[in-house]
Image (tube, rainbow, N blue to C red; front, top):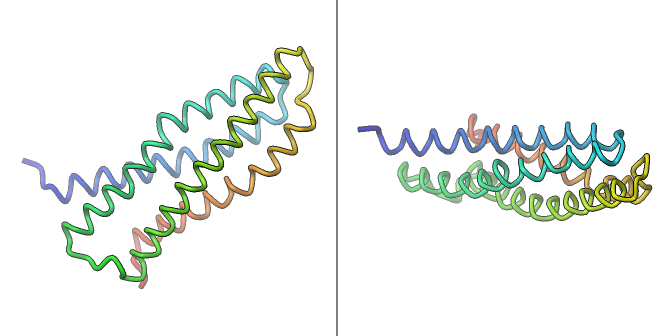
Amino acid sequence: MPDLLFSVKLVHILSVILMVGATIINGVIHSHARRLPPTEATALLQVISSVNLLMMGPSLLVIPVSGLWMVKLLGYDVWTGWLSLSIALSMALCAAFLVGDRFERRLLDIAQQASLGKLMRLPTCYEITFAKAAPIGGAALVMSVAALVLMVFKPF
C-alpha cells in the first residue's frame, strides 16, 4: 500500500508542474497568436482556453488542497515564513488566473469577431487588451517560480 504522504506529495508536485507548464505554454502561444491572422489566432486562443480548463484551473485547485494536506500530515506550522508566503502566492495565483482568464476570453472574442469579419489582421483593440493581460501572465510566471523555489528549498 502506498504511503499517504508520498502520494499527496506526488500529486502536489505533479500539479505544480502542470501549473508552471501551463503558464509557460500560455505565454508562448499568446506571443505567437498575436502575430497571426485572426482565423489562426482564434485556433491558438481556443487551445489556451482548453489548457486553462484542463490543466491550469484544476492544478490551481489541487495545489493548495494537497499542500495543506501535507502541512497537516507533517505537522508544520502554517505561519512558518516560507509556508505562509507559499500560501499567499497560491492565493495570488488563483486571483491572477481569474483575472487573466477574463482577458483571455476577451482576446478570443476579439479574434473570433475579426475572423468572422474576414479581417486579415487582428484589430488594434486586440493589442490593447493583450497589453493589459501580459503583465498578469508575467506576474503569474514569477509567482509560480517563486512558489516552486519556496517549496523545494524552504529558505526560512
